Length: 480
Ligand code: ASP
Image (cartoon, rainbow, N blue to C red):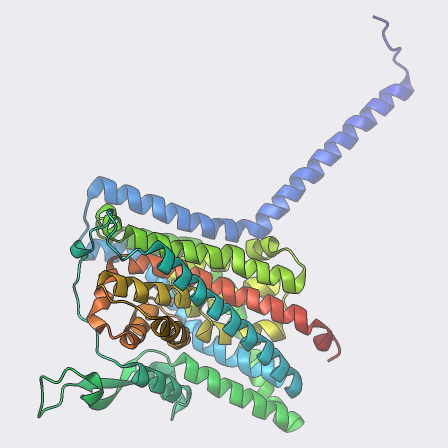
């Protein structure tokens, strides 16, 4: 073999090649490090969900059952995290809506609102139809071999309500008589058996009582904030100081959000672990409710990973996958907290910072979406009501299906963005097909888990919606 003579030139060339290779390697590593650094929190949050499930299952398998106190100790850190997130809901919703509307031209606000509402109604309706098609074709509630419906656990009695009262309560709550009260309480109609005829079974003949229940009246706050925003936009210069106040309050809430977000991986890990520790024997529950569970899951997956991304792609011509990856932290938080309202600060952050959504759109569309747009809940309400009718052997006519689709949409709008709110408004859908409120207990055992998945889809629906509205309003926003 002839050896290449070593000259100073090719020696230098070799050194240069090595140096170039080292430089490239360094750049590659830097790229990875940067990518890891920017996505660390997202990866850690998703990791928090996965680790929470693993730790929970391992503890459950090795120890068996846990006392309420033990579960409380494990969920403690998660609960503290949740309280921090919740403390941001009111300042964030009010300030974001007021400042977004006040900073927009009123006719543009109107167009953005119309686009958002058209999207919410279309996707909610599609979710309900998808749910009905799945539950009618799979028939999880009819006894076909596998599940033994008679064994389904029926415990705990729910409150008595009628569809009319629920709808009237929804509208009443949109107009709270007092802002302070709206921050802490909601109005609710309570039906009690009449004194003279205590055995009366027709709920419409029962006595009506009005009561105030604890919980933020988010819908009321949303309406107040929209009205204040419109008034500020009309008054313009005259009320500039007040508009600036809301603007600053928004900036403040977002800054605090960035601090709280850093705690999300740990908070979510503890929340998920504790929830798995307190669950009933899942194998037994799934053997009874497995097909129902699978039907809801199939619907949620189709809605979240086929229908919504497809609508997003068709209307924006952009990759729905990148969009979804960028908001995975919000989706993981939704799963961990089971509350779209508590997830709102993180959803806004993800959309503005990672997906580049115009803050005026994100701050306008997301709070409204978190309050009224719930695709996952709508789909679940339709499936659950029809499943219960199947278990009870109630024959449903076409009219009943139509009634279910309308009430399931209304029930999802009326459900608050808090854990298992959908279970409460499900009573209204059951009422339309003449089923008693107590029948909600048929699906109670798996509801906490389905709640987490449907909340994740609810948040995805809001996020895709904001993306579409942003894209469709881009030109108008630029001209402002
Ligand atoms: N937990 C859901 C949410 O916050 C509502 C529900 O379906 O119960 O979006």
